[in-house]
Figure (cartoon, rainbow, N blue to C red):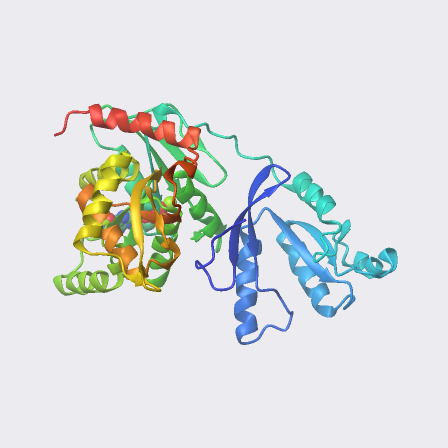
Length: 437
Ligand SMILES: Nc1nc2c(ncn2[C@@H]2O[C@H](COP(=O)(O)OP(=O)(O)O)[C@@H](O)[C@H]2O)c(=O)[nH]1
Ligand SMILES: [Mg+2]
């Protein structure tokens, strides 16, 4: 289970495989029923998680027995109309029927008894989950015609849909067939000056606030799925509101996923000079950790600077998918090491011998040598900077990994994911064939 910690403090997101069915699992801080202070914060998080899920596992404690809190939570769950499985946990040595019986009062249907620590009952619980999950979205096979996949990501109301319409509304754009929709996002395939793209517009959770107004709430799940599915993410922020923490969390998520990234400050129209200057200062201070990403000030509404996003998207995509030979990477490594040697550890100098590529989007460079576990963080940063500069990588995270190996022939080649990599190579070949403007 991959961890998506960091987006929120109290909710953990992870990808899971439930008997072959991929899904995203959210672990929450829990509900005590007497939410006050920090508890009420946790409750808010749990309620938000319930909100964006297809299926809720309501875990009760058999040793503690049925509590008022359980009943309150059950009432809430009934009101949401969500599908619920009640998991009677900590059944341990107790008589099974006696231990679970009280929980039938919750009237939430079948009970699933487990001892999570021993893994008992877990498989049949997984089968029940599988039965309750909605039909999976049709798997959209990667296809050359998809071209570069661009996800437009940001908080509700920053202007994502406006930007998508603007990008598709250009004269040089031809939109193909019908947009594909998954439950979570809209995928639109199009061509711009002969180059194929797929743009992904992520929606929030729609809900009615009152009769006339529908508001969107931010959905972490939908956003993470769009990020993972994209080659390059355009992270949109609302300049009229300035940079907020959630923007930075999102950015962190894009980088952790290893996707290409372009940052766009939208609603740049109609701001006074003072406000613009303040935002630029803020960005400089808060975006230091992504100094490799291009930054654009745009108005999706008026179309200002929107065309320039493509230059950055293509540059990020090329950087993210470029291929480098072992020779080339090893030469860069040797030069870097001769300019600035790695330190001594226990009286022996760390040796870095050769480098090769370990994957694309994000690019991974694997460096072999000895005592590589002892390479200090600052030296790793120095190498990363050097590779970035010499290889001219922009708009993509770069991962450097070390392996200790004395005999290069003992090292197995890293496995290439056929589907992902060959698709990207094909698209890239097409991009390269295009005449440069
Ligand atoms: N002033 C201004 N308003 C914008 C701009 N882009 C979008 N908006 C407005 O912001 C609101 C939200 O836009 P929308 O595209 O629905 O945001 P989404 O929730 O991120 O998809 C709408 O009222 C848009 O007209 C812009 O560049 N400038
Ligand atoms: Mg929208």
